[in-house]
Image 1 (cartoon, one colour):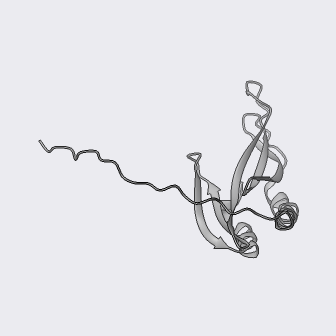
Image 2 (cartoon, one colour):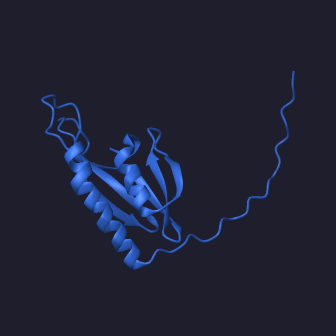
Amino acid sequence: MKKRPRKQWVYSPKSGPKPTISEPLKQEVADRCNTLVDTVLKPQRIHPPFDDTRFSYIVDLSTKWYHSFFYFCATYRCPAPECISEFFEVKFTRLEYAGSEHFNLAYMRHTGKWQEVFQGLTLDECLTTIEEMPVFWP
């Protein structure tokens, strides 16, 4: 029978402080992302509900800032009579400010964990990627 390797401690240094984002850049990101949501994502992703009342459906798309993270959110409605809550919100795409007007782009996996796909993109590149890649859609 093979012995298990011994456990050992490993040094894990703390990461440095996250870069802070300026208010004008925050406002620009919010404005441009809201434009993308209103002109591209809402027309594509918001549809009338199914006849079957067992399934949830998207009723609204929105965005919000939380510290240095910018989230794209979908609000769902669950019409089933046994549902816990009639409306619930799901974050589906995240932009993380990486400094010097660059962002890391991630999507929410089915496991409930964020999967960072791209690093160091400009805002234009992020918006183009979100528009073109279905993995960043709700």
